[in-house]
Length: 238
Image (cartoon, rainbow, N blue to C red; front, side):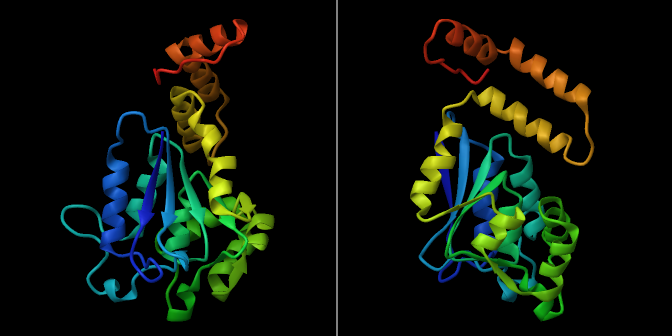
């Protein structure tokens, strides 16, 4: 099952405590059967145009949850299931930082991406300076954060900031997200865990251990049996 989580703060889905709490609620626990999460921006104008500047004085968090974008971006990154950003319109500042924490990004051709914080005498504080250089070249990451300029989805795709550029977001989700929902939930969790654990340092032993865990799992045994028997596997997620 694919669960869609909406960033909903009209008119441009500026990231405030409502949005961060929505993400916490969605990602702290998952309903049975959720294999993939898609983050989308409500309305026609934006995935998210950035943090709500008025919230900088008091912080972005409420209650006993950590405030700000960085903790919720870390939560997205550490989620056990794949999380995908489906981007249209503006994807700026804190909105882009949320998108960068996802496993991959699908964007429509009208999307505009950037880090405008420097225009306020600030810098990206939700993981932007840390995640962007791991996706694009360090020099391009520096240019994005130092210039404050926006780039098109086509440029973002060429740079590696966005993985897939599409004409229609619904069709893009069907093409690039729905196939994940047909895979073994156990294998997806192992793959995500492995990528996260080895993002900064190669670890062949960890990969071999993850492969063994998949092979010994119920899903792994079912997948091998289904292949040999020429049938569709029946995944249990175990």
